[in-house]
Structures are given as structure tokens and as C-alpha cells.
Image (cartoon, rainbow, N blue to C red; front, side, top):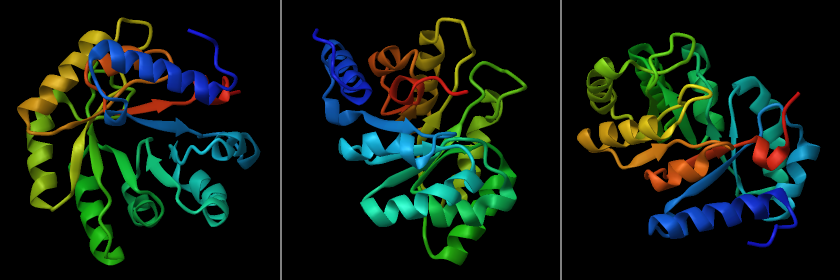
Length: 220
């Protein structure tokens, strides 16, 4: 395979190849460019190449840079991929088009209230603590069904499940487990796979990839 001339083209080639190997259509997989900590100047090349789906992990940082970029480029889709504080729910609902980190009952309540106030519903992924790591966000696997039921009772539109596997271990078993949990609970979306493992995630059913360093280079 020839080397692509931009990081975005290279990632797109790798996604397309992984989809072919897995017998999937490229259109089944959404690439979210994780632009957290990167300024408008760093984001500009991807926008110029036509990419329009980006992810941020802090409400305040997104508020500082995306309104102006949206004025210039219009059709941007913005995903909240970091842990969301309940007191930032209203701001997140007005700014983001998708939230990947619904992980607790208090946030279900805060989002439901924010949806009513904004008269806008934002699709959500429930983040699962797939590796049982206390330092990471996510609902414990044993509490997942209860949280899904609470979200559905509150009319939160659920796209699927999200996870961040433990570092420096083979991610495939964790991706496979997330896929089984989603299937068992009637959810189709799988937000999984980052710069170092997105090809594996595609083979195991990922629908949304969260790719940062492969597109922007390593963060400081």
C-alpha cells in the first residue's frame, strides 16, 4: 500500500483496508478526529481536506475554539469524548452533537433536564469501565443494565456503548466484550478504537473511532 501524503489520507487508507479485511463497508465506520489540546491552526489542515467530525474532551476548551470554526466551515459535527461534569450538561447540550461519556445516574438526570431546557436532544454513548480501572470514567459492567434502563426511562437517545481499554495490553478482548454487552442490551453503536488500535476495533465491530495522535501528532 502506497504511503498517503497527509495523516488524514493515511488514516483513511488504513480504515478502508481494515474494513475490507473485516468484510464491512467503509460507510459503517465514523472517524472522529480528536482535536483536544490542538488549536485552530492545527485543526485547519483537516478542515481544508474536507473532514468535518471532531471530538473534544473539555466543554470550556471546545467553547473557546469551535464557535468561530463553525461560523467559517458550517457543517461541523462535534463530539464530547471526555468525562462530563453534571454542572456542564447544559453547556454540552448546546455545543455538542453527540456525547460519548454518559456514565452515572446523576448525569442522566442532568442531561434530561438540559435537553428539556434547550429543546434539543443529543445522542449519547454510555461509557463502560471495561477494564475495571478506578482511575478511568465509565459505569461498572455490573451496573450497566440499570444505567441503560435509567437513560431509556429519561428519554435519553442512546447510540451505543463506549470504552477505553487498559493501556499496554491486547485490546481485542475488551472490544469483543463491549460488543457483546451492546448486543445483549439492544444497542448498535460501538465507540471504540484510537490511534494505536483502531484497526483491531474495526474488525470487532467499531462504528465510531476516536483518533487523535495519528492525525495531529503526539500531544505535548
